[in-house]
Amino acid sequence: MKLYYEWGTSQKTKHGEELCGDSIAVSRNPDSVTLALSDGLGSGVKANILATLTTRIAMHMLENELPLGEVVQTLSETLPVDRVRKLAYSTFAIAKFHSCGPAWVVEFDSPSAILLRQRKVQPLVYEDRVIDGKTIHETVIDLEIGDWVVFVSDGVLNAGIGGLYPLGWGWEQAAHFIEEHAHRDLSADDLANKIAETVNELYADAPGDDVSVVVIKVRHKLVTNVFTGPPADKNKDSEIISKFVKRTGRLIVCGGTTAKIVSRHLGQPLEVDLSTMTSEVPPIARVEGIDLASEGILTLTRANDLLRSGASKDTVKFQTDGASSLIRFLLDTDHVHFIVGHAVNPAHQNPELPHQLDIRMLVVQEIGEELRMRGKDVTIESV
Image 1 (cartoon, one colour):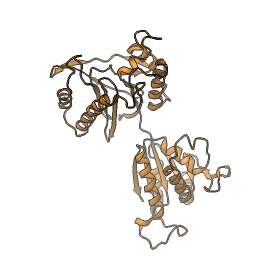
Image 2 (cartoon, helix red, strand yellow):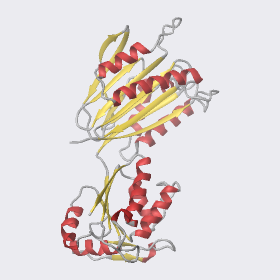
Image 3 (tube, helix red, strand yellow):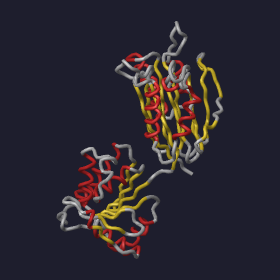
Image 4 (cartoon, one colour):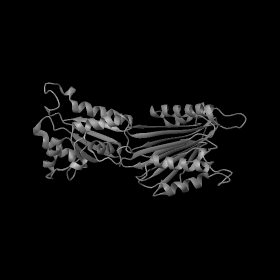
């Protein structure tokens, strides 16, 4: 079973400083997610530079598939030690989460990762090894759907020190808080922000240390399939639509003619909802078995315009028109697969134009680019 990793991050800068002395880096490859969290010694500009240097070295090496041991050794040998305080100039936690396999976590002088399964903290078994005089903690985790993994910097554990928590919030209290708030319907970003805001409150809105939180939520990958435009070869309608309706994930149809073809194939009526019509977008329709059925080019163009102007799930949250409904689906997913038919609609273009100039395809490509910039995987299939 393939695992999908959703991540969320949140940071608070130490009161009185302009730059956060921690650094977070996260990236996704086709089969894994890589992260690095570093806490620079002290605070401010110097700490920020040291922490950023640490995460960049780690991410560069991990993304280039260098052996994990080599990554740890390079970081260990690169990071100097403060001669007076005998402390590393920056600490780090680095991890690699594989979609088909265990997760690998390595920590150096940073708080232990917090693993939740069924909203209960699970103990992690670490192996220690000494590299260049530095003790490195390493663990391998077999993750399951529904698990959460949370990484925090020292600023989280020190929250409330001298006040509500004389010795600071601490790992146990932080872990207990996460147990209580890691609801299944919460996003990774939501949980990261909730932790950081609570820490900020414990600091009385004046953090005494830089605060960083990275949350990994383990779940199934969310896929949305968008079929727009009838196939160029009418004889292939049945074959292509049969494959479309069997695809994993949510099913969206954009195009009046396309919706009628799908409706006939499914043997289900097409019911237009006139209450969803606006001056810019035609009404949506309802077909049993399809998550959203809308008009085609006008709806796609409006959705494209909204996305390019910065639309988010929140800005279209209460809108019922086709373009807003489409955006909600597109943004509430991980992978969008477009199936673009090339049957010529004379109302939209000159049939003499080559397919490369197909207006529908151009709009879909622009939407795809916007979605990629927002971290979505996008694939486009022509039929």
